[in-house]
Image (cartoon, rainbow, N blue to C red; front, side, top):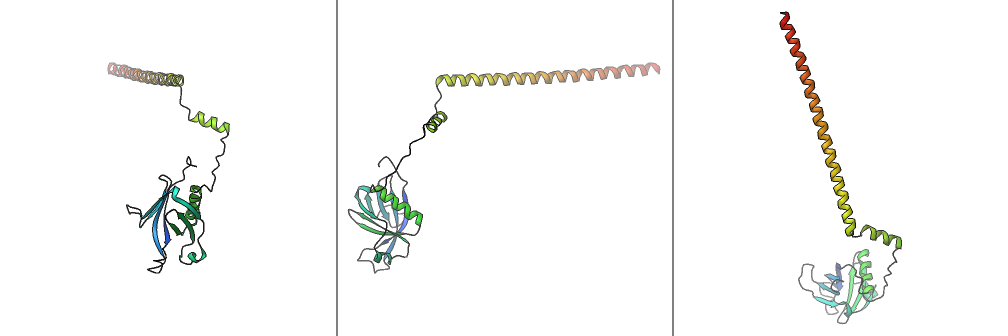
Length: 197
């Protein structure tokens, strides 16, 4: 199971106080919990910004988990979803108020205790080949052919630009010739008018 990692969970939960503190300022404390697969640890702080954990346990110290709490415990908290965690040092009766979060927490603890099995579906060979083709690193020959193709396209573009330039020059020359003819005609016309007068 070690090669599979679930996302880290960070959440607010209400923790049932120990027997000695239940009747002082209510039966629960709201605490910030972290279930970190990255560090294989489970613990809580008084608030999310606290730098130190009040309690912290390694995954191997977690020995039991239940998706429910005892009926008498349920009465002590207004939040809907209760669960029970037992470590080598301590037991926790905890509540969260969101169903999706509760389901994620339950799955995570069952995963840690080896109670769920993650099945990896075999990849279709055709899909695998397609993925390999998409992400294939080009060979030296393929890179060489790519450079040849790029150079060919560059030359074609260069020829195209030269042709456009030649065409432009040709049009400019024709325009100049046309202007010259017009000037010549005007000059002849002016000369004839002068001779008449």
